[in-house]
Figure (cartoon, rainbow, N blue to C red):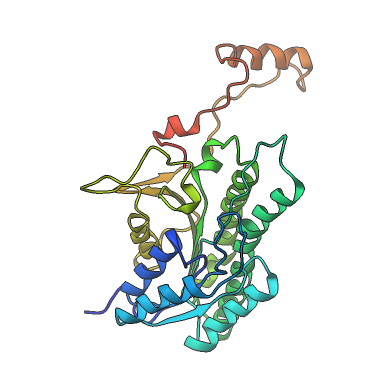
Length: 312
C-alpha cells in the first residue's frame, strides 16, 4: 500500500530542531522526499554561528529510516537564499509539492522597551521568511500549471501562534509577525487555489526551546502522554500536506496533544447604526460607552478564553 505522501517533494524550514524537526520526520515517514532547511544558529534569538549540524542530523535520521533527505542551510529571511532553497528542491527532485514554513526566532521585550533591530529581526525571519519561500514556490506551481493547462499539486503549511489570537504582552514583534502570517496565508490561499495549491496555517502548542518561558511549570510528565510534545503537532502538518486535505484551504488550526481546533474568521460582535447620517462623538460615546460599560479599564478581549485555549 502506498504512503500518503509517496512521490511528493517537500521543504521544511527551521527543521533542525523542535517543531520543524518533528514535521520533517513526519513528512518523510509518510513518504515524502524532504529538504531539511535550517540556518543552524544555536540561540533562539538568532544568535551564534550558523551550523549545518542540526539539519544534517535530521537528514541522517530520515535516511537511516529509509527516507530521502536533502540538506539546505540557507537563511530563509534572505530573498536570494530562499530562491536557492526552492531551486534546490526542484533540481534534486524535479518538482516541489509541499512547503512547511516553520523557521523563527524570538527577541522578547515590552513594546515600550523594544529596539528597532529587535522588531526588524523577528519580522524578517518569521514573516519575510514565510513570504520568501511562498513566493518562489508559488511561481513554480503557477508555471507548472500554465504549462500543463490544468491545476497541479501544491501545499503550503505556515506556522502562526496563539500569541496572535490572544496577544502576548512581551512579544509585540512576534505577535505581529504571526498575525501577518495568517494574512499571508489567506491571501495565498485565494491567489493560488486555481492552480491546485492550498495554503493553511497552524497555531501549534508545543514545548520547544522557543517556548521554554511560555510553558515554564508545564514540564514533561514522568509517565504517560506529554500533550506538549512537538511530535503531536506533526501529524496535522502531514495531513494538511496530503491529497486527503485538498478541500482545506485558507484555514487556521490550533493544535496540540490530542486536540485540533478550527478557528473561525472574526465575526461582528455588535453593530450600531447612527440616528443621523453619520456618527458624531457624543453618539459614539453613548452607544460604545454603554456596550463596554461593564469591562474593567484597560481590559482587552479574551480570545483565548472564548476559544477555551491557553495562550502559546
